[in-house]
Length: 123
Image (cartoon, rainbow, N blue to C red; front, side, top):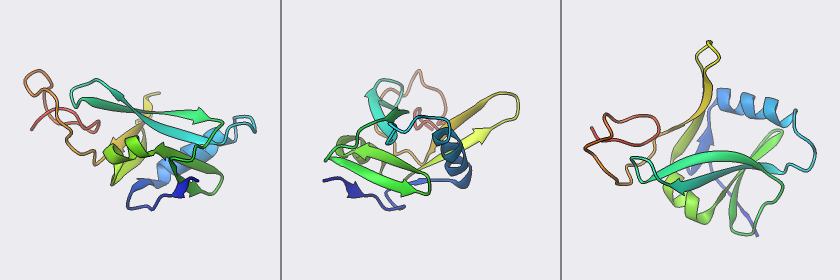
């Protein structure tokens, strides 16, 4: 059975919550949640993304907000513990979700440049 996540494990800022609420009003009823996932690659060795999902698995942690849920599987949660998801709109059509407080996971230093909000690079 899925388990509830606490805000100390994963959180969304007010702008991120507002954008999620807006997005969930635009999708059909089969969408159960937004799944946060990890994939190999990038400077940090792991990069993260989000997608709508119609299923919540037994090994998923669930962060429930008014109007939507965020789910993360156990393996991905290990990389995201303590992370805050924000939504940044710079007003020029450049709006995106940003993962803040990502732990340094490893990966190359030489070619990555400075540390960024995506958790990659070295400083």
